[in-house]
Amino acid sequence: MAQLLHQQQLDVFVGYHAFGLQESDDAVLELLFPDEFDFGSFLSPHPGRLDITSAGHTHTALLTVEVWDGPAPAQEAAAWEEQEEADFESVSGQVAVWSMSLGRSEDLITLSDTAGSWRVRVCSTGRAAVEALGESEESIKGVERYLVQFWPTRP
Image 1 (cartoon, one colour):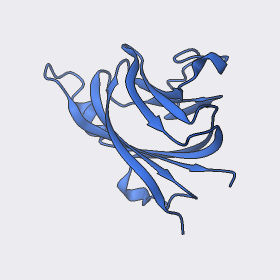
Image 2 (image 1 turned 45 degrees about the vertical axis):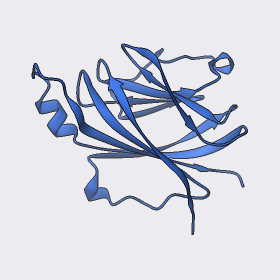
Image 3 (image 1 turned 60 degrees about the vertical axis):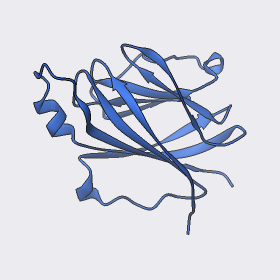
């Protein structure tokens, strides 16, 4: 059974319905966030990058990241409005969080001390609620929530 290595929670600023998770050493990437962002997909993987489409235009989402030593436990489908998986390569073991409107945040997600290949599952809930608040003049925080689980694909 896989073991949870670490977990962290981050506030992610969503702008223009989007945010991304990108290899921290972006000098090795050919395509940088937000180039070729696909707004028609919930999760759109690119080499060293994961683009995530939000249901809300401008708000702060809650992002929980888990790093596992093996395949993360399956998530109950009924608990999430969206859930998809993809592969992810990291040369640094660090992942930066990007906002469409603010650029790279100071927050880093640590996967490991070295390069590696990862499987990632991205789950989201609160999408209908944040979409309904889209015309609100108030600051929207924590309505849409994400769980991102990483586990190595090679031992």
